[in-house]
Image 1 (tube, helix red, strand yellow):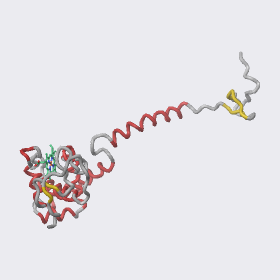
Image 2 (cartoon, rainbow, N blue to C red):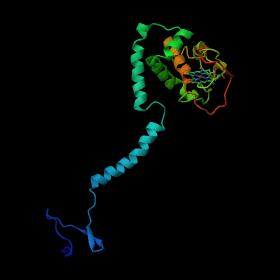
Image 3 (cartoon, protein in one colour):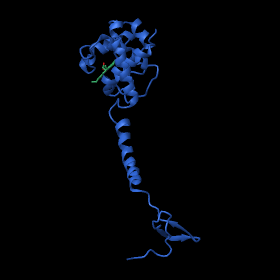
Image 4 (cartoon, helix red, strand yellow):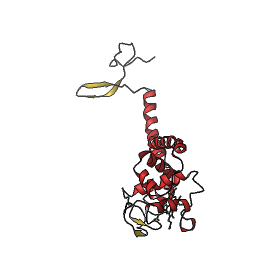
Length: 202
Ligand code: HEC
């Protein structure tokens, strides 16, 4: 049986307190390791953090709570389609929904679900052209946006969405969202394409 060294006092709980083997200016300290469960959580969270960042910030589009919220709001708005009826893809309707936060939010969800792979998360362009600048290839006025979404362009390089999206309102509201992107131009990876066209109102 080994007796503790005389320098190791006994705590009030009756347990032996282990002293570390150094002393500075005559000051000694107890060897007081953190409990196992504490260290386990410490390492667990360190390993968890990079996975969290990768999943939510570098993963596929649409995983954040903001995106989930947008999708919920869009599905609520979709319930109103019966009341709204079928929208006409004309200048007046598209312009009206550019100022309607609910309609725009709906268009944004359609865009995030179907269009970001080719046009970028903010419409800045990728495989397809930048939709936030003043240069346009197939579009002269705001109603052309709905036409291109519906019919496609460049022999299907831009797909026709009229058969893929289930309701004309999806096309009209997405056109309103796309038209609104021009308010915040984003630099993209592609050079400007097409001709400079006047602002939507003109
Ligand atoms: C498979 C890739 C792809 C997807 C997905 C796609 N687009 Fe496109 N889009 C293109 C390409 C490529 C063009 C350019 C066509 C051309 O060269 O005339 C284009 C052009 C456009 C234009 C006209 C731009 C201009 O300058 O004339 C609009 C508006 C547009 N897309 C909107 C959308 C919307 C809204 C969606 C989602 C519903 C979408 N696109 C999904 C590839 C895509």
